[in-house]
Image 1 (tube, rainbow over the protein chains, first blue to last red):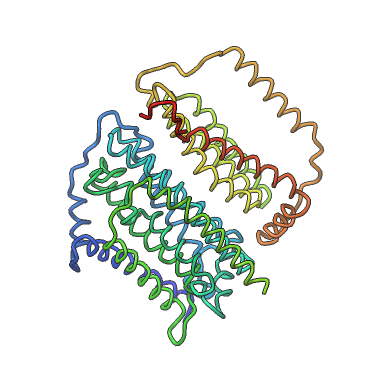
Image 2: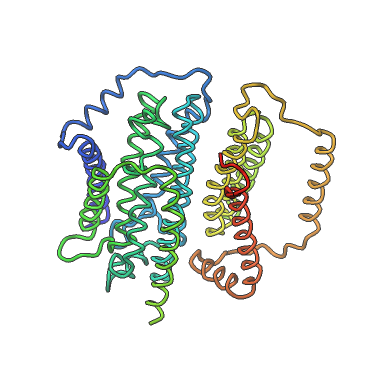
Length: 300
Length: 174
């Protein structure tokens, strides 16, 4: 297939993926597949009145939704969809994805702070506490995957999984990365920063209309991007028989994204002190164990 | 190509300085912290322009977390974190001006008097740089990194120890 055609197919599949994530998100709350739901929500938000709080921080308030969506797009750019089909083949891609996604947290703090509202501010700072809980698990799981590939390039990470996918080679790393990225995307049960029913939307509580749409769209892109990251780091990326490479990438990504919401539907929201406790007392030792295990397997 | 890089370097450098100046032009602790973050990200951008990809990405990643943590600590300790109460943040103005001029002069002296060598026409490929950096950290500079790591660990343990509630039987628990 020609390059242009492949990219067109990828863009269409990616857009379909965003719709699929929106659909699954609604399913995770209602238990029903509301096919027109995402479209209705989108149109409703467009017609919504733009409400601003008193004495809000103009620069932060206007910049935050754009930062949120921009960093997600930067993270997508370094993930491969197929053999050689990647927007930016960086030599430090494994580090770059984490660097970009740290700014999700920065954006949430800015959103929470700028609106000059109590719920927003609590949500914003919760996002930071959450980062302290999950970031070690993310970075150390990536480290083990990079150790096996002997490269921080994403194409190498996938190629290294040709004999055996990382989910089998380093199952502990997979579990850590899987739950840590769920916390990174603040999906239930880790949805502390936006906590519906508790903080009334948290960091985004005071955002309406077009800005809210940007956040919602950014979140959908973020979930899809992180599902793609799980696929690339642990599920062998584009590797698979018969079908074209990028089709395999999207099948795996969609399954991972769906599983995020399925897990979130059945688990209660975790308390933030428990999250930090789990992150540091159990996830960090497990991540160290994973690195040692991979190291031994590589030396054998 | 070289001219483009130098121009970009200067532009991003000016952005870094501008945000660095903004840090002191606001009374809001969070605005101040995030201005510093923007300045640090610009410095990360300078590394990227100089083709030091690993350093650039690392700088951008680390600063995102560090400045946010700094922001929450400043917010906790300052009496007027939002800057809405018009509290004056400046103090000891004359000594700080003197300190700034002296350190600025020293930095300028180091820049002008150091023999920087010839401009390297091409940096090694990013993957090669990562490899070289790994070798450096694991060989010649290992001792320095290990001591830095141990110091940070000690500081973390000490910080946790100060936050612990020590149960003393002689005192009534609250």
